[in-house]
Length: 220
Image (cartoon, rainbow, N blue to C red):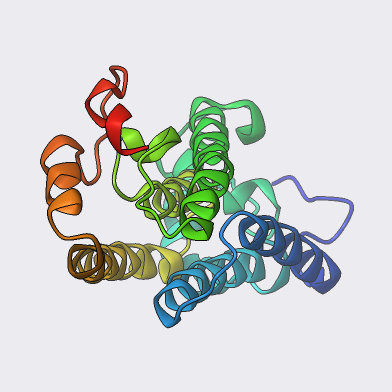
């Protein structure tokens, strides 16, 4: 059984630093204003805190599953950092998990999620300043790019470092974002009326158009 020379857990400074970096980065591209915005951002922040607490602080999932894991994978040092990449252990993937297929896919999802947040914010901000409907940039292809961005980021982290708490939180948060999206659409429909109806008829809610946004050029 291999043991890390440095402790893999109890690194609370890393919990704080990593959580702060991701939460502040997300905040910089969402700028919550309404109660709806704060609920969305707060739920995402809770997910991030739960994730990094188990990644560097206290490995609750490892402790709860330690009996089953030690019986099934007796050669695995459960207190090593690599063991926290549970998908690799469960699926019997060899090699450094940081360079495995799941970690690379996780990185792509994280880049896509944060990229979508950063792309969406200036278009939403510009529309809000003009009291207009946001129909440019990612909003020309999908109605809720910020919610989709949050979901991609959470899915990416689940591929990289699954925990019981975040696995339970993920479907709950997705359901919450679906409800928030419906509430947001009701508000937009009251504010913009027929313009919003035309927008929703031409623009998917969750899965984006890959073609150009020609159908919305007149509303920009």
